[in-house]
Length: 239
View 1: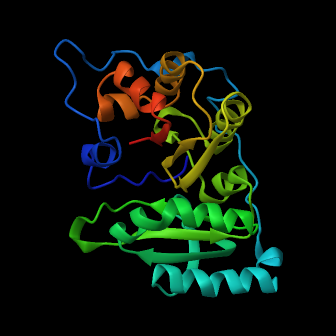
View 2 (view 1 turned 120 degrees about the horizontal axis):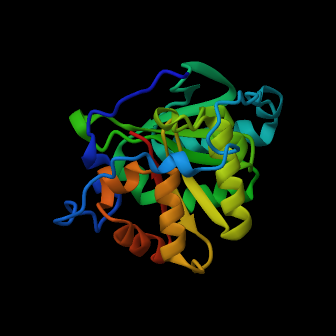
C-alpha cells in the first residue's frame, strides 16, 4: 500500500474549496459502516497501474517552449515533478511552486489554453496558504487526464481504492457526465462538469460512496454535496 500523506489543514482543506461547507447538521453523523464497501470490485482494487513515461514526448520543441512560457505565467522556476505517494520522479514532467492566490486566479483558463496545445497544466498539491507555503502545479506532455492520475498515483488507499480503482470510476463517470480536471494529486482531484448534471442527487450519492470524506469531513450531508454538483463543481479528497 502506498504511503499516505496526511494534510495538516484537515477539515479546512475541503471547506476552503466547497464554499457552502458548514458543520454537519444536527442529527447527521458519520455512518458506522464504510460506504465504499458497496463499491464493485473493479473500483475497490489495489491492482498495480503502469506508470507512464513522458520523457520522449517532453523532448519536443513545443513542450520545451511550453515550459518556458509556464515559468513566466506562473512566476516560478521549473523543477522535477514527483508523485507524492511513491516519491518517484515523473519522467518528463515539470513542477512549479506557485502562491495559492495566483493559482486560483489563473488555473482554469491556463489549463484550457495548455490543453488546446496538447499539454496538461494542473495543480497537484494544495497547501491553502498555510505557513506561506505555495501550491504545486505540474505540467505534462499529454492531454489524457487518466494518464495524469496514473503518473500522480491518485488513490483512496485508506478505503482500499487504489489508482486503478480511481481511474476506472472516473472513466465511467466521464462516459456519463463529461468533466474537466484542473487538479490531480495523490489524494485529491478537482474540476468541473462541462454540461449540466442530469441527476445531481443520484450522482452525489455515488460520489459519497466512492469518496466518503468529501461529505463526512467536508460539506456534511449528501444533499449539500448534490448542491455543489448541481453548480457544476467536482471535487474528491481522501483524508
